[in-house]
Length: 369
Image (cartoon, rainbow, N blue to C red; front, side, top):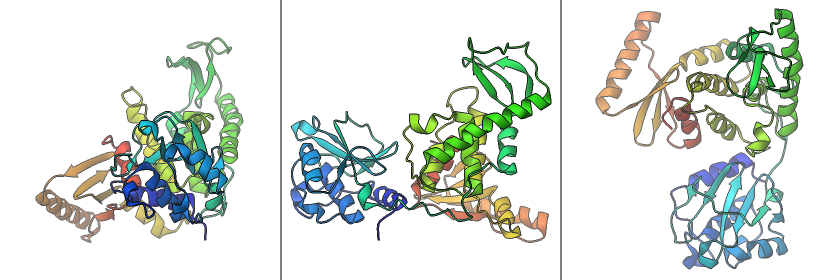
């Protein structure tokens, strides 16, 4: 059965920090081509270890053998014929993420500096491109919950203003370029009805962007989160930053967390917005009381990651440096819960030791990455 792009991502992430083994030539263990052959074997390409030659030869050998096709797709092989001391260099690319082994036999690394690409090939024929609906059905329109999330962060300002970003803004975040608008900061005013009507017109473009860019489907909570993100970052964000069109859930939440305009006056507000979008994206569409209770419990939780423990509350993530701190946290949490509810409920513990992407997404939101 063909692998999904999410399964490929998980496989590649699992190789990070490891030296890849080449079954056809042990002298290539840890070399850049060994990573590619491991990937080919994982996706079920026929006899990947017959694909010999140096990295610079891959555009010719892999295409002629029917292993890869020319051009970018969802799962890509990037080649630099000029790298690797004359032997070339090759690595894997999915969207804006990359995985590569070093030609000196080093372990696999993710998102390290890439060299100039001379050729791009794709392995899409070996992966599943099924558009099966996400759990909770397929959504294509913004719900009332999604609209409320957007308006919560945008707020409605009925007098035009200038943030210094080259735009004049009014209403529910409606913005027009300076010099190309009749809006005048501090002068133009709208009625509430005008602002609401403009939002209705504007939102259609952001809904269409999410529907048209991605080949995968979204349930209602996921779709609402994506439209909120797009409304804030612009309709060109996915194409400009080369987002994977068939992106996995973890790819999306990890990527969303990056858009916080770090170091700016807007960073704190953007962190809150990104976290709410990620939380909504990850919320099952079910509406049961059990789900609501679980969402409430998740406002405070502990994360097991690496060899440590992290305490999370809202947008705060605090590493616990000693076993005593972890013990005290558990005790105090149970005491507080017993005082509030009459039951000493233990703190929820998320074991993310094997889920780097999810941990990184939360860490970025909380300012630790």
